[in-house]
Image (cartoon, rainbow, N blue to C red):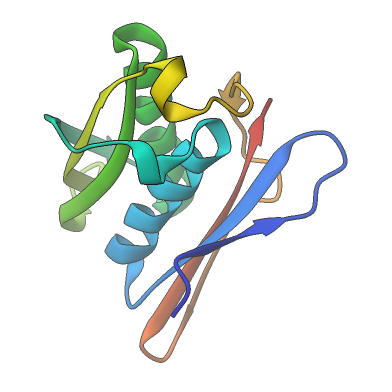
Length: 142
């Protein structure tokens, strides 16, 4: 199964990420998100970051997940290449996510910068499930 693919958009960048379940689709969405900005194949998993989030539904959780990753990039200068969603379950608020991400500080000489992401959007956001598979789609503002 492919991890993600690009989705046509006239002015921004969209991607559809795949997994056997929602957790794996979120992991692959994170990889696609960073692939928008850098060649993730050159990002070494040197620093680990833990992420815990709660949101009212799956789309809000996907938005918050990608937004947290954007924050880590913008505020801490990190680029990530490895992701593990350890818990994705119901909570009083709706859904909770516990995950870890690995990467390193951005180095333009090493990581071949592509385009900058300004924001996450709800535009064209989709979550689909089938037998033994799940996909999530998102568009980021560049």
